[in-house]
Length: 163
Image (cartoon, rainbow, N blue to C red; front, top):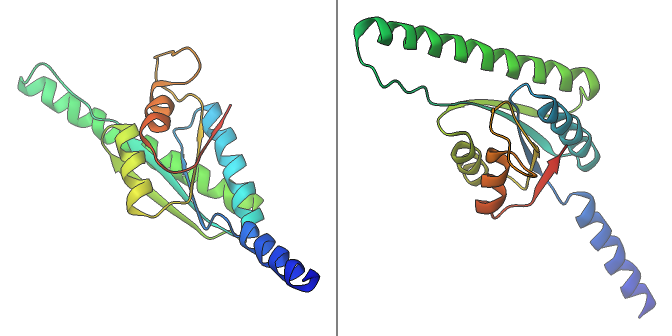
């Protein structure tokens, strides 16, 4: 009986060691997102998990459709894409510097940030989402930023919010 319990405990501990196989960390360049990246990469290293780094370009809307405004909006979209590519590049370099053994993937998406995070977590069979409590948005909610709050309210996956 004791031997069977010991084997069960070892198997259970082995399962816990590999509890998370794929961790998603959305980044936007903000300090909380940098803290989330650090936590996610340490967790991925601990659990030998794959790390997926996601950044989302939010939609750019314009109430005016005159040609000069359209050109400015297109230039703004191009600049946003460059900024987000740089955010991904810096995050990737940081992970490779601190944890070169980690398997990482990067994703650049366009759309509403919380929606894209939720879609990515479902599509990629993510086991854990690690994200900052606030991002770069100017909105200040009581405890959580609007994106974090929306993900927490609608996601069915485990989420770790990092300050």
